Length: 323
Image 1 (tube, rainbow, N blue to C red):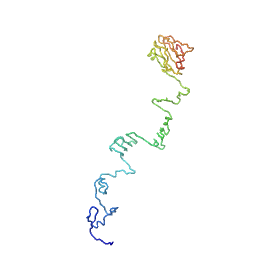
Image 2 (cartoon, helix red, strand yellow):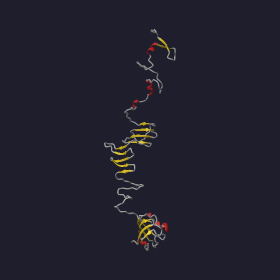
Image 3 (spheres, one colour):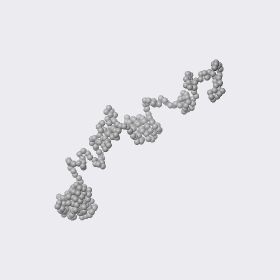
Image 4 (spheres, one colour):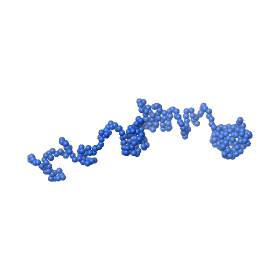
């Protein structure tokens, strides 16, 4: 094959769309390659409309897109310092809690459920949530700021919670209840289905040595006696110690009720102006089986001392006309 030189000012060529194109040879010689061109002059390109994609962006296009935007006021991605509210999520940027003026960080929809982190103009920091707030971690500490970092609240991985005062644990939850160190001061009643015990309190299941006076009320059951009439009977649930003034409708011959083995006490029986002597029900047991008589004087008081020995078996002693 022979090679030679072709001299021409113009040349016909085809780019695939027009087979009869004519180009200056100089234009073809200076044309940039289609792949990885390197421009050495001042290249130009058409400027397309706003929001055009997959096109070459000219300086004019960029200037048009960012016109009116103050780029100097935009935050850096690293080490940014914010001087106003920061909104993370959706919602109106006009939202204002009217609580502070030192800035908020909103996380979520600030016109609906959101989290608001605040540092106010009095130097206080607030965490405000418009929905339930959960704090989760393997372990959680609330500590006093300072060199010692004294603990206030410590939430442990196993589920226990500790409350401290001056870094000294005072309250701790356990798998069976709570442990309290120190004195419990209550302004209201403390109730418990199992009873409430303190230092020095008696345990029902243990032997006791009483160091204080043991006392109780003397229940006046006269109104019960008068109200029940002929059906009235001594009711041991009314109290260990009772007092009653008889009337013509009251009788002691009715069987006493609700007696419990081991219960003991005294019953003070006062005669009406017209004395009664009605006898006793068979549940009452007397020395040598001899039933005593009530004092037959109007207004006289007899004292009945008793101890319940068992069902339908009440040992009793009557002291007459106590003055």
